[in-house]
Image 1 (cartoon, rainbow, N blue to C red):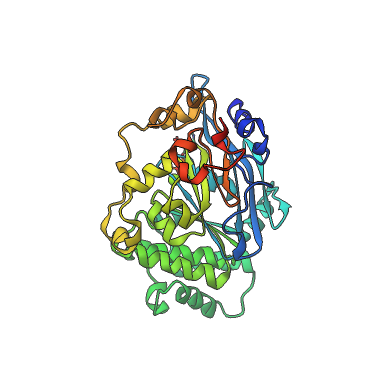
Image 2: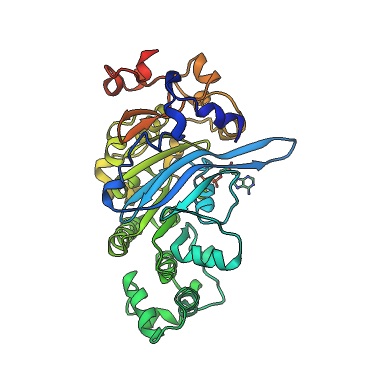
Length: 377
Ligand code: ADP
Ligand code: MG
């Protein structure tokens, strides 16, 4: 465990609430838990990258959360905050520096090819760029038949199976699309094919990494509503990764706000977007267009999302430094303590917490009168 994350585990005011790391185990209840049974647990995940000159980049630090069947958890943060690295860790595409993952209560140990195939039949990863995920030399039919054979074995009626997948992602009439190559499809159609391909494995967990960020703004809402439909129909446990907190409010049960590799705030999507507690979340929400008017939000903005945050983006500083709150260099409320000690996630309610020493100033209405909270010092 890094020096940094060891500091993170100390808890609030020495009360030791940090043992759950980022406030999950035994401390906070996920706002997504009511939707369905627990599917996947990310337990204190950390990922370091060596970046030369003896420096280490802490891309993901002590990140814990749960995914539940039929629920969406959103991982929100600006570019470089560690969202994709977290997803790749969960997808088994990147080795953990420390921490562990459980699927249906069992520790995940992917060592060989067969293990990985079995794991992939439960956990599917869809990412931003469908061009990168679909092989340009294969037709849509091939791209779908292959995972069906791989994950489901021999199928009596392959045509019916492929057609059903196409209908699930609303690419109809299926016949018209099956013979096409990726370059013959629009961006939205390609992304539908990559959703269909993920569904071919009949997964319980879907990791959707910025699934609409590269699509034309005019179709983002429609694609999110398709994902929502798939979530419901297949009771998928979904991780929705985005830099757009407005879309997370629309789509997710729980929001995890990530900054420089750490979860700095978490809680029910509605509460977080209505009354953000962490100064970083406050900035994110303030720079997002009116969240009550999401339709126009999704239609009316470019792909840059939260890019209107303050000019400085010291994400490297934040991820390489080992002391202090990673947001301190950008935080309007930072004081000496923030630069010296990294705060653990402090509970605000039983489903909500934020990692900030200045919550008493940032959101006095949320934390005042709560003994043992961040206000006591
Ligand atoms: P996000 O998805 O939130 O934009 P990433 O997880 O892609 O963020 O990246 C988090 C940080 O880790 C970034 O600073 C990125 O440059 C760094 N990073 C990601 N992958 C590697 C790698 N293989 N080697 C070194 N640094 C990496
Ligand atoms: Mg990413």
